[in-house]
Amino acid sequence: MNFSEIAYRVLNIIVYSVVVLVLAYIFTISFVPIIGAFAFKWHYTLLPEVFTLNNFKFIFEHPFVTRSIWSSLIVAFTTSTISLVIYLMVILFLYYKERRGWITTFFESVVIIPLMLPAILIALTIYQLYRPTAIGGTFLILALAHFTIVSPYIYRNLFSVSKMIDMKTLIEASRSLGAGLFTTLYKVILPNIYHGLLGAFLLSFAISFGDFEIANILAPWKYKTATIAIFQYAFKNVWIASAIITIVILVSVAATFSVAYLSRKAIAKYIEVTR
Amino acid sequence: MRKTMALNKDFFIDIALISPFFLLFALFIVAPFVLALYYSFTRGITFTLENYIQIFTTKVYQEAIKNSIMISLKAATYSLVLGTLVAYALTLLPPTVRDLIKSILLLPIIYPGLVIAFSLVLLVGGTGILTNILYKYFNIHIPSMFNIRSYDGLIIAYLSFLVGFVTITLSGVFLSFDKTLIEAARSLGAGPMRVAMRIIFPIIAPALIAAFIQVFIIAISAYGTALALVGGGGNLITLRIVSVISDVEYDPHFACALAMVIGMISIPSAIIYGKLLKKVVGGII
Image 1 (tube, rainbow over the protein chains, first blue to last red):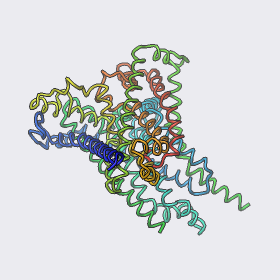
Image 2: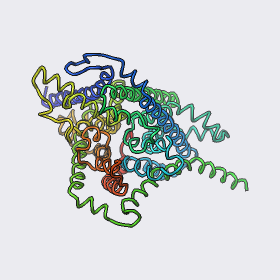
Image 3: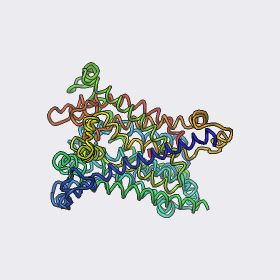
């Protein structure tokens, strides 16, 4: 065994230990609040000294917390629906006809704009602009502000799926056979990018559900979201805050793993189409 | 005549498909940005540079800018190193394990920033569980060695989601990497250092820079983690903005000028990032 072989072995050991370390870190920060949600007393042991279900009972009985979870769900659902419909239309626009190259480039650059601007700036000025208008005191303002932060994720997801199934050829084939826009949409596009659509929906749902930075500034009094409730209870009762965090974490976990599952399905579809 | 009709119909479809996007984009990204720009240059309704002068001449705000940049640079550097190693490890693993690890890395990105801060404080904070256990049984007192509610603690908290960003951006590049190049170099006796510097690095350099810029922007504009971890005691631009728009002293003009300072750093970086992104395969954003 020469020197370079040993060096590669050492490198592999290093990278695998980094992976283990990073995963252990993520597992720890995920499981501490989940275990804490069942704790009544937890100070000097690896697991809580006294377990209880009262934290969950509390969050489902206390109107402020229950309402905050509901408003998070409403806002996340509205955000994902609005952004999915709008970006589906953009994707249709890009593939419906032969487009020049710069149009795609333009959209790719435009959707990363929300990434350039700090969320706090967007939230602050949206608050200033729309407070006096009709949508000022409703959940719509929060949903539309979340539209900006989920944009890059949804666009990239939908765009890569459409590229993968070769949407252009599909649409051309369907149009050359005389199908209109709606027929093409229902019969050709939707069945093919169904998994990608659902994945994008879930991802944006989870991001909107877990947002604190925009909601903290923008959420109207009636629609304080779950993350705001976490922030308030973090200073009062950590175990109740843990119980709310557990719900947020469960939503994230469900969304992430469904997205992974769905993208595998989408790839399976791609193999089916190309075969 | 018929041709013009058809053209008109297609044109109408184009407009119908694209207008909702542009409407929302104009109302919720362009308009807020223009308003922020306008606010940052005004006091009341008079045009003034006072906000910016105050920011760049007051010691507290100079410190805040310096702290924000330093913390983001450090967090971005560490996460780039760790993320690159993880992305490399992913290329050695079978696809199922790779997907699983990627999904796990996506989790902290989706979690609210304050959840990460909350968990860390619960674990190694002043009266955290791990702190208590170590102190009681091993007589090791973590807070006297390392305070999680500090800027260093913040960097550790940031790493949890920045590593995921780097890994997911880079793994696409690494997986599409032509492995025969490495094998050729190895068979000729090149060690890992030489392979990395001469073959891998020149090819992945654009992706590395793109990933670095991406995590730098995310670190500098995030405030959820900082608010929950360092709180009012920290001096970062984002925390200054939060305190300026608190109920006590509500000053949107000054807050917008502060946010614009972040924009001055993040917008040019993002333009470079956008240019590099074309060379990068995959990535979550």
